Image (cartoon, rainbow, N blue to C red; front, side, top):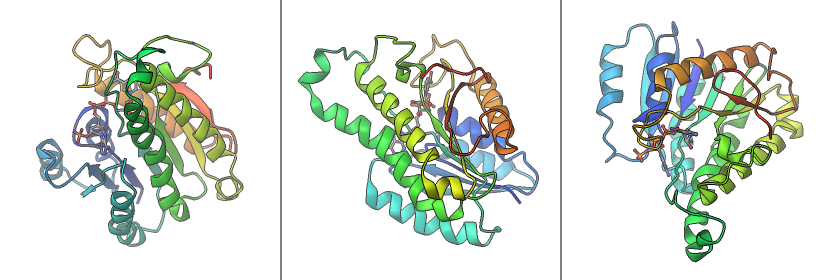
Length: 247
Ligand SMILES: NC(=O)c1ccc[n+]([C@@H]2O[C@H](COP(=O)([O-])OP(=O)(O)OC[C@H]3O[C@@H](n4cnc5c(N)ncnc54)[C@H](OP(=O)(O)O)[C@@H]3O)[C@@H](O)[C@H]2O)c1
């Protein structure tokens, strides 16, 4: 009875994760949307058509600590009644809200950096902390990052977003190496989904969400059985196709 959690699941890559994960036999899928006023019609359609797994739609504003705590208190009874283990936590919700920023202009509106850090770094880390007690041997924390967050590749665009994703990468390295996370046998992966056709990626993007998510779930599968990226204590940075990315 595998249990999966996906944040930011009403559209884009998060929705596609749900679409593919509900096909797992006997799975419990917990999908979050920002709030009760989010348009969750695509998720509801999946819920209506699913067969053999159960989809729960909960709410989480991932930049807000109270909302994260409230989401966790709704999700934990579901986790307990489905075996008590979270097999996969996908921290997918993210923003790239001031994409024209560069190294000088991002200083003109520092609140944007705060917003990106809250959503893209503190949110995923806080959500993971709330569910840590339910992560155990073989569980995977899968943080959606971006190639723009790679220091090694050094792509110079979307400065605010890039800083936040580089921070998420570092936070993930520290999470993987945390004594409790290692003792519990939890794997931590950061993954660049590629340039995907979503609202964030835009219509010019190269990859369909279906292809990206299929590749990322293969990365998860290998990590969960201790293959590539499956080394406890060491976070790995992958592209959706399973190739490793420079930090
Ligand atoms: N698409 C790409 O080419 C690309 C490339 C590299 C990395 N990524 C990463 O992949 C992930 C998914 O991206 P995407 O392309 O699917 O983006 P998207 O189409 O813009 O969807 C983003 C999702 O995150 C949710 N979200 C954003 N901020 C939130 C918040 N504060 N609280 C709750 N939910 C929030 C959105 O909810 P609402 O509908 O309520 O806004 C939406 O469900 C992100 O982490 C992104 O950085 C994407």
